[in-house]
Length: 634
Image 1: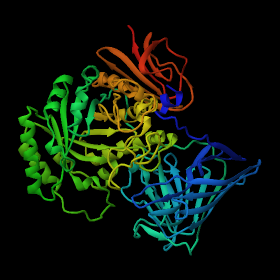
Image 2 (image 1 turned 60 degrees about the horizontal axis):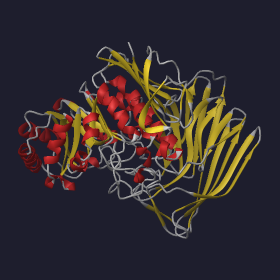
Image 3 (image 1 turned 180 degrees about the vertical axis):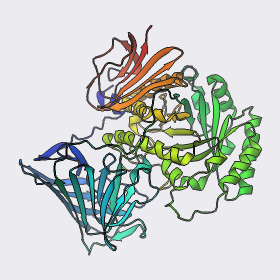
Image 4 (image 1 turned 180 degrees about the horizontal axis):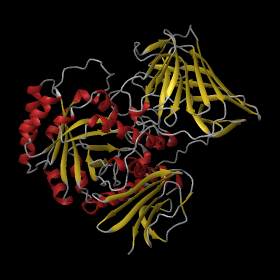
């Protein structure tokens, strides 16, 4: 197995970024964008980039030509041409980026459509980082109203926290003011934390205007963004606005193995040994009557429950438009489960329309109301715990807020590839998770939270007909079969995910799947998987071992959960024994600090042994995306 496949599941590697400096100003040039823009070491913007969004919210990658980069001690300049879409019928953009040691950064674009071009959004996008922005006071200059001061919400906004914008000034640390001014369109901001992005996004073409719209070849468009830093002696570091509970003493969540369709149980049973050893506390079944679930044979599901000893949680996706129809759907599901000898320990039911995205306050098509669904569940599943929330992303949870009093728990999921799919952006989504959990907690009124199913790819697409059909080895937004799911990357990312949410004590954490694109176990697919296609069915992906360790840890008492310096660490105690999971979240080796466990027994997943943990002495460092499981020896 090549190192690239071991780490990310694909031979396609990402181009290295180039670090540019002009005095105290620093930025990384990455595929046409400026990222991690810092002034005297303080991150002032997460990114300045140019994007084209197609109908359905696809994000085509640009073909960059005529790239020129100049750099002196006082100034850097970048110019290039970018082409989006098909030659002759796409969009050509000339971009120029300039950074100056005086504290000025400017981005300019000339946009020309080659033919009438449909787009949902075309223009500059500016990302503000979370630390030093969320929860702070900013000054906004509007296009059609007087300027004002306002506070960026610490709790995640379901809609746009700032609209009708021409300029915004924020102060990431005392003594530093950062003004961002927009030209060529009206800009507005959305709270990207809804989708687990670690940023606030400012974009042009207000979402309230009709889309898609046409770019006219006869009418070129110009846009510009100017960022000005005013520094009167900034020394502090930007801080987070989110309040994270004390980690020590919290209960580690149960592990739930997702089944995305009842038919998945039969494929899982072919690997009985691995699943028996996995021993998940729960199977999380998605039963979508609009996707043929009502006709599926449930006997394999019953057998899988017996094999694993797991309890069953059902997420029933209802096609109904009215309460009576929903009642009938749930009555039929209860009868089918009973005939198979299955009694769910938990069940939630959700209108299919609520998996689609709607702006706050936007009218939704007819669908059964939440109290009617709760009543039908109580009627047909009297012995089961009733769960509300959403089977979709936190965005939908936040925009159609549940009624906690109806439910014993509230569920939602995330995916890290809604807006960007590069390795750095996906790993950065972990930064948003405490914000999501804190906001969900505020909305839940003390009702327990259930997280997942999660994964690198997207199981559903609230913004289009379905997940995108990406090339097998490519990293693409909203794609289901992300190659990183079968690499060490997914294993490390999942440990990082747990480290970020563990202090909030979710009841269960669902990730992966038995087989398929999200699988823990390798099986033949209808697309190419380099290296894995040469292995026998039943080989174990790195994520299997993380799932197995976490399944065994369920119910343990958390001692600490931390992320920092590129490492994620979760330490717990169960049955009188201390254990830890430590993951390197970066593509470079990192030194391993003392984990604080006496004479630890160490099992390592890394590029040298990704499919089966090897017992090693406590290492001095962890390789890229490596995961270390430690057990204290008394």
